[in-house]
Image (cartoon, rainbow over all chains, first blue to last red):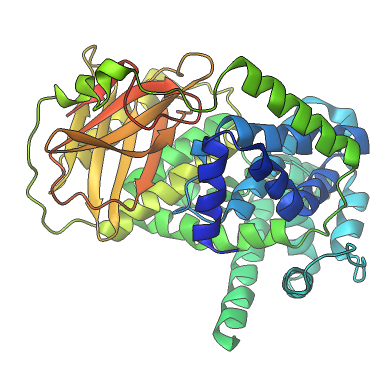
Length: 187
Length: 250
């Protein structure tokens, strides 16, 4: 899928073409549901988050701008933010630090049936990149990104000063950026 | 009360991860608009943040979820069309063609900076949590930043009759970037749509929904030959031609 494919799907959504919505769910549904389940502790509520994300695209396809990135990244961003909003309002849906870190560090999670090989390979590389940043950086980044914690909450939960929490987030993202840049240069 | 540059810079990583309070989100966003160094830092992290999302293992969608989405989508379609047709006596967007026009002189514009503004604002618009406690000072500062952008060479300034909102369309190498400050949320089931006018003919540059009054879009449509810009209220998803009230214009 390139950007012109993304634009073509969005054009169909703008026309109210229901088959385009089905196609979006078929193409990106696995990752959308995957990220919702990664953030939200209750699988039923994670389903609702994924459902809301698809309906948000159906109702406002014009909010996607292909200049800003792929439709996949857009949908994942929308889903993650809906999930984070939910867990911030409902404490019982928040995952524990241990659960978040364990899921992020799981080395072999298997693959989805019928998942495209390209998607699997890319994901494995990204997981490898994430696992190669330092443990303390990964812990902070995972708590913030998948756990919905603010940097202040990260500091409290890890028992570190706020400044250290900010530094770990910055250094973690910087390191991840470096690893991804090297990977792009190689390919 | 006001944070220093270094303090704000230390919040860039938490900001792009959405790991920041709504109040700080606004402070950082306002700072980024005027600080190229911080803007570049925020933009530099965008790939890493996308990678986090893509590292997640996909989960098979339950059939019941797909059925629920399709049922709800059909119910929506029965209530309102996805795109409102333009009215027959307004086919060329007469409302918009009545705009005052001016032809900008394009020169050297910080195109990269303008693109970064959109990248950063877009991120902020998606991640902000809507419960913002802006002070009047912060709002005034944001407005001033948009005014400054509108004064850069080649930019077009958009104003509103009430003077509460201000927008700027900036030319870039690949099209243009639009930012606005001071817009209320659009009416229910409506959105804002930006139109580029060439010889009075409107072309859509995209739709946006403001967050805390701030909105931004990027267009790959060249601004060469564009002699005016307008923003109208349109049904959700946008319209093929302007149909709603005009809220901003050059």
